[in-house]
Image (cartoon, rainbow, N blue to C red; front, side, top):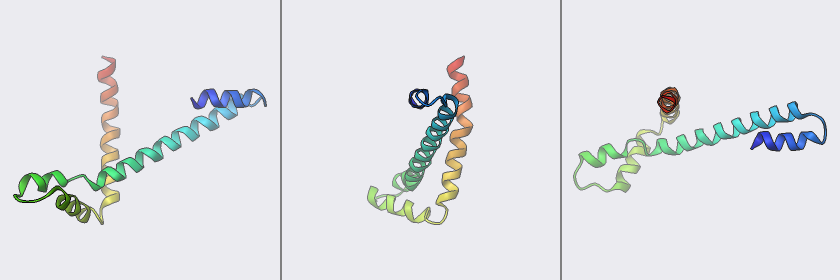
Length: 99
């Protein structure tokens, strides 16, 4: 989509490669930013299942609050590990789709 929009905008000015490159890079940056924001939101709820499954008479609200307290200081570390795991599994996913 960014390629088409960049091409249409640049065709009237004669800078097709420049505008296409700018819009493609901008699209990738915006996509990466949204991806990281989703991972940060996901990291808040990362380990609430463990305490919910292990303890009796505990609500899901309590486990989510406990998960937030546990990850308060190490949130960036958890986000980096989740992104690393996603980046490590992408080539395997592509490989299985191609074979």
